[in-house]
Length: 245
Image 1: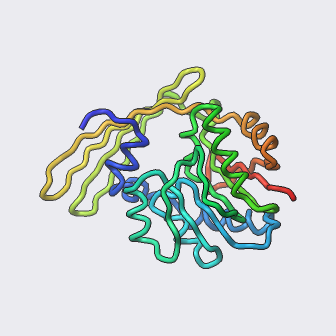
Image 2: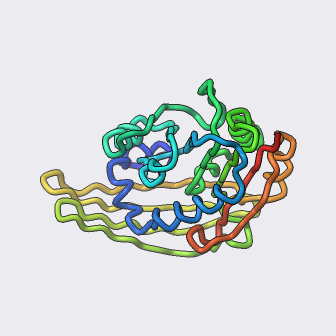
């Protein structure tokens, strides 16, 4: 398999490996911090939660005790895994650049920098507008943005490995960049019992996170922005938007 667009590759062709690839991710710590943000900032009285770009539903699985959860994702493969692994939540297919669910939520999440796929101002505005229109007065949107230019490590290399017995995987990555874009290349070697070895190349580029741009767009859409840093979310931090009544 040759080079593909990463959004199609990781969320479709490699969807079944997604949780293995990110097995290091501490979902429990992230959800504990999110719960604190919601408790301190949300003013609406309901408990409806929407996770945009929900992937395999790992965050939702940890929030079901306190929230009525809906997950939205564009990938049929990701949604199939989420529906199989997470019971008690609703999962729907939709594009974050513009969706209509005909209901409002008290909490909207967009984590693991899924917002980075809104690569143009038009798509970013459409995404934030969809968030605002689906948020109740007093509700809160929590976004994990992409990295700023100062935080991006051009020339950085990394490698992760995974071994489940029947599947052995290695992923090597290289971070490039221009004055406007963070670029990356990842190469996967996947050995699967009874199926052989696959070599998959993934390349993509994201605009650097511009806090001022996000804040300006959010204010125009009726969201009061605030940026917070936290250990669970590392250098990316979280951008919060409160919809005042």
